[in-house]
Length: 212
Image 1 (tube, rainbow, N blue to C red):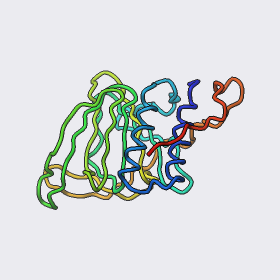
Image 2 (cartoon, helix red, strand yellow; image 1 turned 45 degrees about the vertical axis):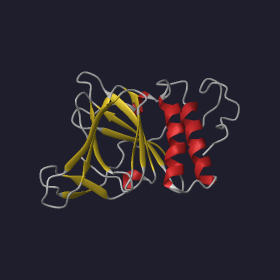
Image 3 (cartoon, rainbow, N blue to C red; image 1 turned 90 degrees about the vertical axis):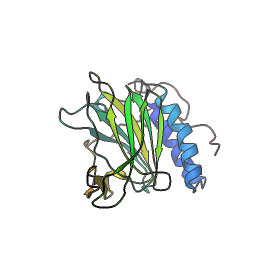
Image 4 (cartoon, one colour; image 1 turned 30 degrees about the vertical axis):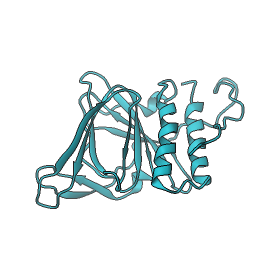
């Protein structure tokens, strides 16, 4: 992909967000939502090695982790009709549909031994932005709404999400199971290479002023 600078600008913008001291969740979700909307508005930048589906289950590819683990950026790939487990995050998360169409289902944990309560259900087309967090609702599942195509969404978390211990849930019983998602890739996209033939000319590559 020739437009990997889009990811670079997103990372620069996110880093600037935290460096500028936007510490409340409301500030972070609002500003991150604007940056993520701009990123997923164009499906011309994600290298294909970070968009490959697995035949049996969804894939989570790390695209970037802030050195201080203040945020991480992940591409989530769902093969045709695949579905993620019902899970929580224990931190804020924004997701944006980059390719295809996804089905979102939200749940509330009613306690061990009781069925999970479904609180929402909707379809997200390309460009849709979703937010979850412990304060606004943190448990959901995402499935591929397209039976014959792979979907890709970009997720931004308020932590190094792949190493966090969080939870999966059993819908009929509310059983909570420890869950560490990990990452399926061993290399990261090199969005800093601005040499001729790798990146279009974008000046310094720095994102514009961030308005919170």
